[in-house]
Image (cartoon, helix red, strand yellow):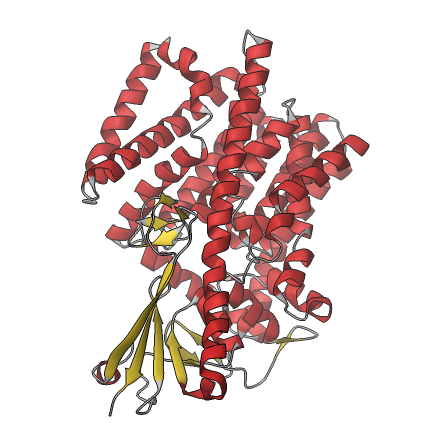
Length: 533
């Protein structure tokens, strides 16, 4: 037990403590707004005004969100301690990284793979680590998925019905964090069915998460507004042909960058099989045309082809490995069903491609890889190779996480700088921009400019951010805007996670297909305009 606690503590110090003062980022601000709009016991504050995507909502209802209420409620419960201060909210959110590290460690031990490489490959992965520094639902949801998998596999393997029951109770909490949990349930049921551990009590336990999450949805719909319409709207956007292309291409690219240091360990095994060589060649040919259609520069296109080909190959190769090398068929099908479920909802249900949407697929793929690598004839080579690959994976994750930290800080720093510059005239400064910019500009007293507003008067300033510019001023107002200055946020650090110029789209591939880019482009660019008569 002491060893477990020491490893988790050291992982926490390495992966999370340096980022505790990360700025409110991406959708963090939406979860904080939901928390602020809630009154206990779980009622809605009357008259709450909410601005989003260029529109204004009077008497906003936070329960009408496409996100379940558990994370906003947690932020609300901890608000007397945090006062919604950045570093205190992140300290309170350490609960979920601890849970992620603990559950990964326990599941690794249960699957007879080395836990330390598992922690570095999964928790330190570039697709997961930056996201787990945020105040959103993605990492908390995944931590509970892994914990539920541990309870399920160990409960059945050790014939502990109480532990199996905990698996489904854990999924209840995961479902109240993210509705994506619904799509993981078939994998759990498959494990039970193949393992022949189904009885009436187990079936009732399996349907417990479905019943509780469904009742929560019904309760929200009856007492507030139904979130179903919002969910359907997200799905419809994602089913547009260009979005389907976006997601289908982003899945192998993100998988490729997440597993870039793992495939070399399998080089001899891959090249020794004609079937694997053919599969690798077919993966490469399959992604060439889609990548070329992006019209990226030559070197960027070659890099994306490499990532997409290796990612597609890794997914297929690990699926084949699970079905042929893992002797426990219930376990192999469980891991494959997990992979299939995440890829399915990423393609058909998500509004766009993003690393944070795909990060749950890294868990089963990594465990399949680790179990396969552990069977290497050379134990010494397997152990040393896995540790080197794991270390490189986590170093890449830390490097991307720091680039994300710098990007998040740009809005906090810029908003503070503008406040110091304009002084008492803050009520004459308007802005367009979502995510962290929205949060910090509001916090510093500036005005959100809706897409239909002509309210700014002569002499007012309007600030437009480059990356989170999800809407624009009205045509009438735009004709009166004269550029005053362009402020670029620059840094020596070369990793960019978001930006059309850098073609990087970590949080949404609508900005670029590279999860991150090595670039000297500005981290962010702000246009400052003055309103003329």
